Length: 423
Image (cartoon, rainbow, N blue to C red; front, side, top):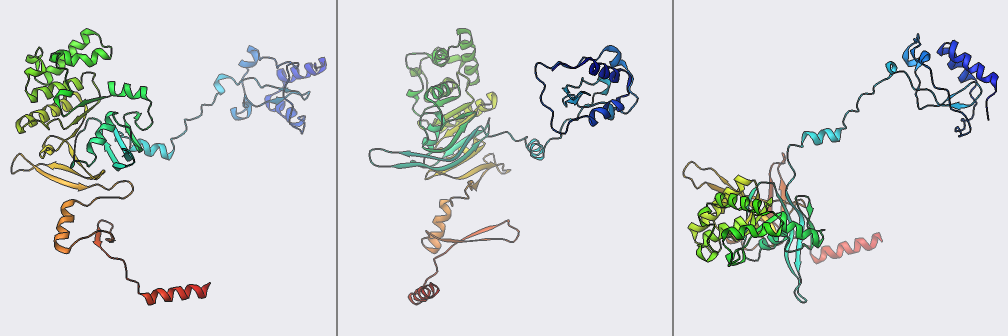
């Protein structure tokens, strides 16, 4: 509905000559009790302020003169109109909200990077015919990026199965396994191929599985890059860089049959690193080598880890692996049992290896086999129940063999009668 000329004149007079505090009072007094209706397209919008109105000085405080631009006001005739935006000098800048306690605590502890390899309650079950074989039984594992780790254990303990899952050669049965940003439990076949091609390199125990016999050393290193679509110039530069790092530049034109076992494993490491993956896995890389060649291969893996910053995981039976890695993870019966670290010693360059038990997120642990054997020699067999205790300060937990309390037949009958009487 169009406004009458008299109403327009009254509104224009109030806007031009009345002070702002007097303009607000009539608007509040004449406002209807019910909420105003939304303006329709047929009703005209309020007139824009002129330059004279914007430049008009304001005598009262800013808090009384400036209203919220988003809040509708009421004209003298009762219609709803949009309040014009306030002048620039009256703008109020709201301070940025303070971070919450949770975000502040996260920032305080953000110095520790997340683990690059993380396994949580990982299971792997093989089902040949009607038989089920549990290879991994709830493995919890964390490996930081750039770390050099050795995994040791008896045959059949599950260490090779764990390595194959990390390589994308086996799919886990249950649990959670993450490498970088990839979840290997929930991954498509297409993504798994890309993962094996770009994110992980693998060195097999048998040297014949790592190298193509009819290609020379340089061509073997360039082959994975050619499959990935790398141009010829970049392939040559990468191959030369790896050959220099592994001290094999003078043997680039030789064939695998013309190399020793240790030299073949060096080339196998270079082939695994051809596409510059952030993770390198080695399954018994020294299983077919003597002690001198084995130490040479471990030395090369250590150099690769330090020079290129790649995360290296080695599965091995080599007894002196602690000398070449940051830590040793011991796996037994499909679970992580302990970890050991090499402590520096002033009596020689060998150092002392110190072993620690691993308590997983569920509170489970495995006693070392040496403890079990020693206890059985002194006290006989121990399987089943144990009693626990804790010091008052909580710094020590004791574990003792225990047997179930014996309940006599008479006591059982008394308990049964008491239960009947209560019933």
